[in-house]
Image 1 (spheres, protein in one colour):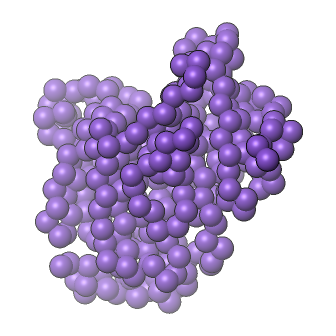
Image 2: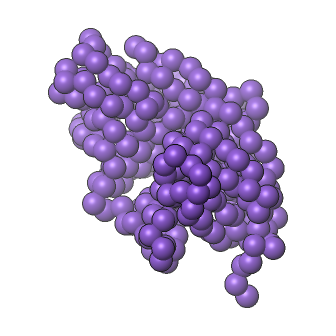
Length: 294
Ligand code: FE
């Protein structure tokens, strides 16, 4: 039976992202973890960088640091980020590109604003999502899935008011190219004023939406939300709806993330996310003794 608005998920809460400054003045809004929301299993963190103007500046970004036990998903909307890691991989992340990095057993990498972009200046806008790995996959071999903008399919609804970039999972009949360890969908909607969409969510999967830009409404109650806000959907119901009022000034940019919860203990220490404190201590020892280097 097709899902109807009657069995939509309710809204469990609306959370304002916490503003912080990272490194040399990068404006970050941290949707979670913050004082109001620790995680949305299997998602551990969502950072929203910018949108901000970069003028000529000495440096920017995050220098060499390790990761173990989860995945980092970088999505760039504007700007240019150069990525380097301990295995010798180097890559440029350009507007519309996603870099899906599975740290697994361990990687050391840097994420710096591209030198040419920095000397020229321009708009910087993007996100980083952390996706947890189940205990049995935390020590898997590291891997990258670069998703250039051209490899991210876009679906559109019939009235042309909704388009969605399908980064992971499926929406409006279009399937993403990326391979995920656990079932996840990562959707970027652009909804013009007067547009609305309904996305089915598999039973038991957690779901949240985050507004990158604009204003919108969520759920059957049409709760108003604005940029920098996260909408957490309740677990019961077959799907979620998002809409933009006809009176809105422009299109809204909305991320919709859904995933099957891992339901395991989470031990976090900075860039390491394991199941137990013992495993965290092991990660620190392994990093300090050079085990993360190839
Ligand atoms: Fe990193």
